[in-house]
Length: 217
Image 1 (spheres, rainbow, N blue to C red):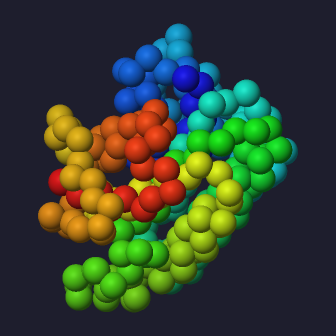
Image 2 (image 1 turned 30 degrees about the horizontal axis):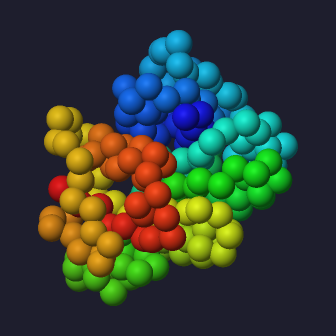
């Protein structure tokens, strides 16, 4: 299967690329800075582009079988809250995902898997109090944009899957995550590697189409 990963140089994006390659898929890694992806393989092609530019996204989407989106802001959350993001637009999740959806419609690509976050959409009311405070005080702009991103995906008309991981860690060899269609989370942490493994499964399978899936360890 030919799979495009948008946001390939972030932690979850890199993990997803690695999981796709280990499963034998042909991967196109979409990134503004290809040198930030420390992965090499004969099955990997790196596409330099900006997700905020529809033309870049269109060229990358053409010919793919599925698209996995792992967009986000990697800068310090407190600094972003105080003065905005220096490198990434605050609406990168929603605007970038809308560009992906438009390109997929144009080129007839149906399968879309999007990583958002636990605590938006269907799981909005399930956050522990501490996390509600963090979302409200520290991550408010990013969470608002993620809500818009989820709405765009739900209204896309594509074969979509929304993956909602809880707090991400850099743990390794943790296997597949606990995936709940009911929005349950066993603990408030999950490794990026586990999330990447689920994103690949969601792209390969019809099991989760049209569903939002909570991911935890």
